[in-house]
Length: 279
Ligand code: DHB
Ligand code: FE
Image (cartoon, rainbow, N blue to C red; front, side):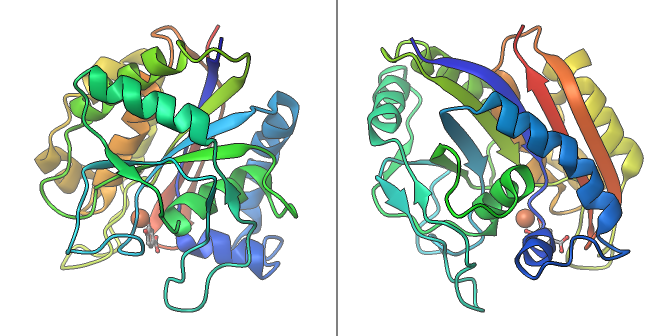
């Protein structure tokens, strides 16, 4: 049977993708961040998941105010990099896993967890930057990817608790897929940042580090963080961290931490990365 073996939490700052694309990762500004990614990339190469379920958010690339699914899953054989205004990133096309994606979709919906089905969904930095962080600059991504898109852009976003429950439903769905494949689930976005308004530039290291600690020590406590608390403590864009709770919910309760890296600043954000493995 299919099995979720690990979860990764990581920021998706677009400038990190640009640093990779333009070979700037050894410059004084970027080197401390990318040095911390080395171990994560080694882990990815050694662990070699067959499929990554990549929980991310679209930044008005595939969707707009015309259409705002709370949760959407990509079931297509491939996903093209989106043009975010300066041409699509020159990264490999994302190869999907339609069979597993449809299996998850069917199981989620029959489990009364309605999700939007996306047959055509260009993917922006929200998805491609985490892949660049974990896989560097390959000619082809090393695994298949099922994009799972969460609305964290437009109020009302789903609660952290709903995201955690979605993770649990995904775990159940994956475990009934009759193929011996290994799966990693990525929760992306964050960490603390605010790109707009009077508090633009806000970063809260203490909040971010406690969030990283609590992924193993008190994940249920994290599900109780309200929207107001995310905004107050981690800035208007800190709400992206609810996507990490989909990842956490999909792991075993006693999953353990195998690696973490936290660096400030990366563009306007606290950049965090954590790897959790099931026992
Ligand atoms: C930045 C971070 C984000 O998460 C994003 O979507 C856009 C910009 C930033 O820190 O610059
Ligand atoms: Fe973002």
